[in-house]
Amino acid sequence: MKKIIFITALALSIVACGDRIKPDGAVDDGSFADDPNGGATAGGIDGAAGLGGTELEGGKLVSYEENAINDPNNVLSEKIVYFGFDSNAVGDDFVELVKHHGKYLSFNVNASVRLEGHADERGSREYNVALAESRAQAVKQLMLYEGAGNEQISVISYGEEKPAEFGHDEESMSLNRRVEIVYQ
Amino acid sequence: MKKIIIGLLCLSFTSVAQAVLKIDITEGFEGALPIAVVPFQWHGSRKLVNGDVSAIIASDLARSGKFSPVAEKDLIARPHKLADVHYKTWRIAGMDHIVIGSVTLQRDGTYQVEFRLIDILKAKQVLGYSFSATKDTIRTVAHQISDYVFTHITGMPGAFGTRIAYVTVKRSKKNSSSRLQVSDTDGYNPQTLLTSNEPIMSPAWSPNGAELAYVSFENGQAEIFTHNVRTGVRKSRAKYKGLNGSPAWSPDGKKLAITLSKDGNPDIYIVNLKDNKLKRLTNHWAIDTEAVWLPDGKSIIYTSSRSGKPQLYKQSIRANSRPERLTYEGGYNASASVSEDGKHVAYVHGEGNIYRVAVLELKTKSSRILTDGPLDESPEFAPNNSIILFASQERRKAVLAAVSVDGRQKQRLAFTDGEVREPSWAAVRH
Image (spheres, rainbow over the protein chains, first blue to last red):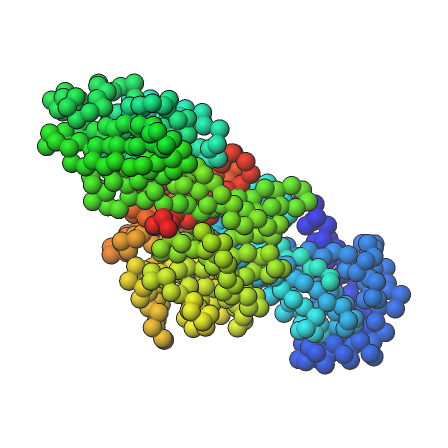
């Protein structure tokens, strides 16, 4: 549960400091949603992508430099998106995180990710594979809106076959309903 | 008395070192037919520990849910020959049928197994056969005898002599190992068909019992295979982008209904096994998956979230057919299995945090919850229509269990090591 609370707090702090942290001026540009691929290219070339970054109150950096995903102090170090029961909606707590990864991909056109969808153990196994795929697809869509390229993102669903936690309690199950963002 | 039978059965199973699955019968046998299986007489050999023919028959019949064999210590007599059977005594004891027989070691080291089924009310032998067996085949012979007895008395085909397939998983913190296993229907003689560090899912027997279809992630994505159990020959049937899941054999064994998401989201397709060509069956933005066939091969039942929550639907496989919704109670109804006579559908019914096995009568659309949950899944009808196998959680361990269609009997097929799941019961032994 700790993890979730932490990420929630982080996401809130990003929103709260929105004006101050904009790293490249392209964050709120609506054109990204209209034309994801074009937006990605434009942002990558013209934007001062992630130069230096800006420290947040929460202590994490927002920057999209190539090695940012490996920096434990960067917001991109968080790579797991959690979901509600039987839901494929990316919750408010995780939208910003997914957007950051989408922007990273748009600024680093040579980077690619595999989105691994997972479900908790309740219900039927094959339905859970389908549900977990729809979770990964929801994350992918959000990344595309931020300018990531379709070819940069692959999706695989494991359903309930690869739990992160082995317990059968509510907390374990909530940690198993997830999409893992795996950079290749 | 019923309790005593249970105890004896457990004992006879646990004493066998080779057994992997242990069968516990957890509830009584109300309404089951009384039968006495008299311990067979052994000539020229001591009773084989793994080949106690009469004990195997008794436990098969008990597991079917249709019979209530008398405990060995409660037998009123132990005849081995027809001439020794006193019909009146058995009739007074309330017995409808008895099984007697013998096992004789031959000079060439094989065993001759004889059995007779005696109808006490008719006061005569109604079945009698002799088989030749080896140490390795004697259990199979015993299961065949169970099938003969079951079929003669109930009029339904027996399925003790076939096989079950299931997936086992051994986990450690760092990795897990999945195995596709095939065993006798009582869990003996387990053999491993496939071992993988990636998930294996959804094994399904072909109608002739020769092949298994399943999903394996061994090549870095979900892929559907068919696998000939005897020859080991395996063919890739679907490896499209996205989901490749839920294989279900058509009753004629020529097609598989499968789930693919290559066109955007999970829909049901039919793959022709001759040329692997696809025909799309459903086209909806929601999840459509877990197709199973009705026995006539003309319709399927599947899970769809088109109403917002997973529910069961029935649809003809003809082009442009409309789905008919089958389930309305509760927010989660999925994972259908159709009985071989096409009358019942077993499925997972979820309410709140409790997932249980329920059964729906197709004609009346009435449904009944059969199990207690809380994490029951993968229900599958055994070929004789009377028993549903399912996977369950008990004290943090996944086990296989069985429940009769009327819900009155429950049995546990406990696994000794790791997790066991997704049972599939072959209709025929190939």
